[in-house]
Length: 268
Image (cartoon, rainbow, N blue to C red; front, top):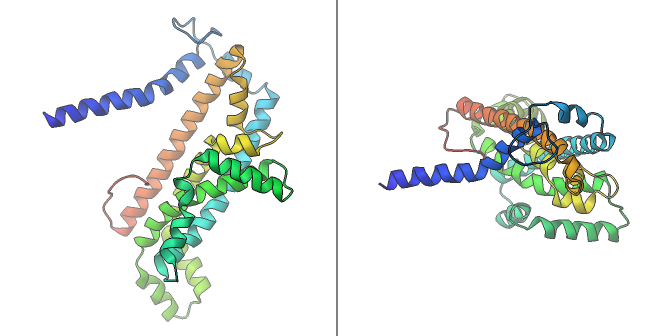
């Protein structure tokens, strides 16, 4: 009886969570401009309209640039922090690692306002680069969480053997460590890219006159006639996000299989 109740709860929860997403493609291919049932016919006009909107293209380019740079920087910082946290002992290690992971639990609105005030105090105007700084701050803990597992699952004796055979610390890291944790690196890049691409609050405060895609979409919600175009774009973004997450999960599981470990769940 308990099992049946749990399954029913899971089904209701999944329907509540994903039903709004299912509505995106329905209205994206709907011929009418009003987001309501009944549907008025099938069309791909709204997808064609996407490429004719210059402001949308500019916001998309901004978001892609920010997401790529953020993913690379956050993964690099996460790689160094995860290696230090799993391989070395140093004073106040637990406190330092906890401080680095703090953005995971801080409200984004607090982080965004604090970053805006701090950057204005040092003379930096809101721009794409200030958004990158904010996104790196919130994405680095996710990268550390992913890469911690990769380093924890790696056999330390492989690095020790390479050093005993004459390799330097740098060459050991490049030739032994990086290939072994590469699935975690790829997974971290994909997750950080997805988080940065979808993030709104920090981008809203720090983007200035160079809006990202979520900020642009928020501004378009004031115009009912633009909603079908937003639905079309949302459909594409959902499809890309699902593809990225599936790819990241594939590399995570591949890394576990290579290490001979049992899969106990998702990333976090």
